[in-house]
Each structure stands twice: as C-alpha cells, then as structure tokens.
Image 1: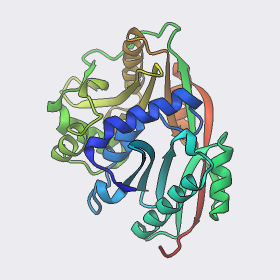
Image 2: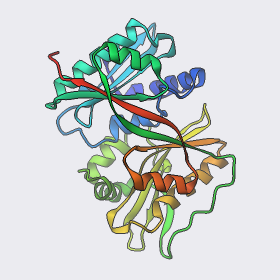
Image 3: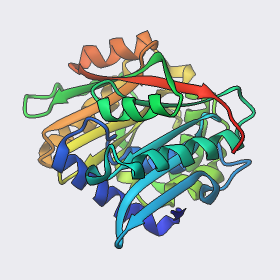
Length: 298
C-alpha cells in the first residue's frame, strides 16, 4: 500500500476498465468516477489527496484503490477481480475504514456497494458493517438508438467547456450544489489534473455569458461506455430544460464516437433527478446500498 500520486490516474483508469471488461459492472464504478471523486469533490481544505487516497500494487500491477473521507465519513474501495473475496480485499476495507474513521468527527464510517455484490456484502458484514439505506440508483441508456435533438431557449447555446470557463464553472457548481469552489481552485485542483478533458465538460451558456447548466460526459473507450457526473443547473436557470439539453448534446456526440451505452447515478431520494433521467430514457439498472458501522479507534 502507498499514497496516490497524480501519475497513477491513467493506470488506475486503465486497470478499472480492464476489470469491468473482465467481470462486468457490478462492483465497479465507471472510470470517470475516479477523477471526479479524487479531484472533483470540493473537500480539499483540510486534507491532501495523498492523505485521502491509497493505492495497492501486486507485482507491479494495480491491485486496489481506496478513496477515503468522501462526504467526511465515507470511503470507496475497488479491488482487482482476482482478489475479490480474499484476505487482501478484507484488509483493504479494514484500512480504508480505519483511515476514514481517523479523518471524521462523525459517529459512523460508511461505504456503498452494488446490491448484486454478494462478496462485498459478506466482507463488510464480517467487519461489523450493517445495511442502513439505499444510496444511489444507477441508470443506463442505449446509445445505439436515435438520440433526440437538444433544444434550448433562444439566446442560449450548448458547447464544450474551455479552460477559460473555470470561473463560470465554479460559480455554476456552487449555485447548483452548495459547494465552495473558486475559479482558481476549480482550474488548478480539477481541470488541470489527469483524467479531466474540458472538451468532455458540456455547458449551456446563457445569453448574458454565464454558465447556466453543465455536465461532464466521461468516456470508457474500452467498454464503449459513457457516464455523466455531475449534472447541474445554476439555480437562476432551473426548469428550462438546460441540463437535459446538455446531456442530449453529449449523448449524440458519444454515439458518433462509437459509445453504445451511457450511465448516470443519482441519490435514491432525489426525485427531480430521477424524473429528469427517466424523461431522457434512462432505465434503472442497479441500486447501491449504504453500509456503515460506528467509528472505532485506529
């Protein structure tokens, strides 16, 4: 086990794409979730990436990854298929839980898993975790079928982002999710990091030049799979179909690139998000379950 470095991102994405190709999606998030969770979540004021992310190697190959301190008290662990269900996976889960417990002041540490992942359920249960909620819905759409044309009100336009959009994207994220980005931090801590490509961040520009809605469409070329994370609308521009237009614009381009399926996750309790994705044609494929245990000394 060692701390993560920026140079690990291409290897991690390549490894996870290979794991998905080998055994399927159950147990693994889209490779776009890696830069999003490591760099794109606004939580770097107190801890560095090296403190929050751990990498395991075995014979020079990536064996596992832990992203700690998500939302303050949650963690993710992804493990190579050959090690699933072994003492190695159990140890990765133990270390991630202890690391996150040391970072949080909360009463619990938690993680989520695919409802089909019996192996992870067994290991977490043995470590004292219990199922306490349904966390996300994981939705998919077939991109081999025709994708509707994206429509926006007069004066708005859909386009890929550029590095010069950092200030506008920071403001749009803050107004969408209650985050605390500055333009400088968004550019330096996310846009300039490995795994991100501004051409994959699709924005809807308002007539006054502000970014009204946005989404990042991550691409896994090996598995011909796209993924949207995040999807947001500035609160001044909601209920105008702008996020829908950004997603449709991205879906049409992904289909042209040979991507055959796209996915998007949302909190199971987020009814507006569910209705948006259903209106586009996304269908629930998986649920993720939240598991937690009380914090313990490390």
